[in-house]
Image (cartoon, rainbow, N blue to C red; front, side):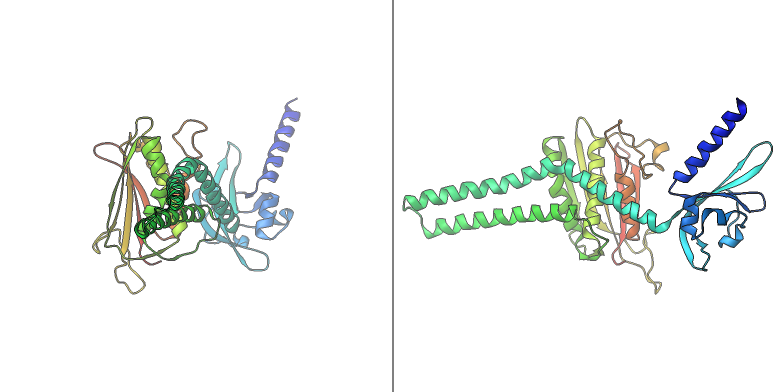
Length: 363
């Protein structure tokens, strides 16, 4: 009975290793591969059985000791001599008799593709959350257009339309049409799936775009007051307009949820960091790199100090089951890092929390 159970357990673990998308190697004390799954062979360009008996050094890992380490990016070598970039983690495993080391790794390109898919999925989920707010924002200018056209037709039928009235009606229709077009453009850009595309843009305009998508919902349904403190002297900045809009949406929704159910105040700020700030980097010539920042503050309950280092982890959430994916802050940090920037959170002295994003003006 014991032998059958042990065999079944071994077969289960073998099956589990084969179904993993990550490559897994098991090495003995001498750094020789004793076990490898199919994914390891696929990533490294071997058949899994060809990896058995090879040394850690043969796989291009001479500089990597087999001591425990957190996941990090490195390179391994394929049989044709080419390097493959992987995210690598090393975990020693031992019992009273033997000691082995488990090495797990994922292909960097596959991780990037997965992250891009998560980014787009989370963006689409955000659109669903913001639908009511966007619908109301569109309803207002469209109602103005409909009412103005009705008044215009009435005046024409009564033959009581002066040139002054006609100009005023046309101006009202034009202004409302442009407002509608602006709202649709913001929503289209936010939902559009694309690779990262940087361009010269306006940081304050990005903030305004994000507020277009949330302000009605915040003020009406959630009783949240929005306070803007934007530095109007900011110059243009080079970044991906749509992705930074997504960062802001994620931070604003996070602030909204932190103030449930009674509401509160969200303050959003933008400013230029002084050159002597420790957060300002240097360019290739050693000169100070002009740096902009924005922040989103709330008057909620704040963040437990023990969780401050975990809130940006993927799938980590303090919300009740079914109320959040745990991807919003993770994706926000990923987008900021793509722009060579930094993001962090801290508790406010009088309650609530502030998320701050720092971005170089030029990538």
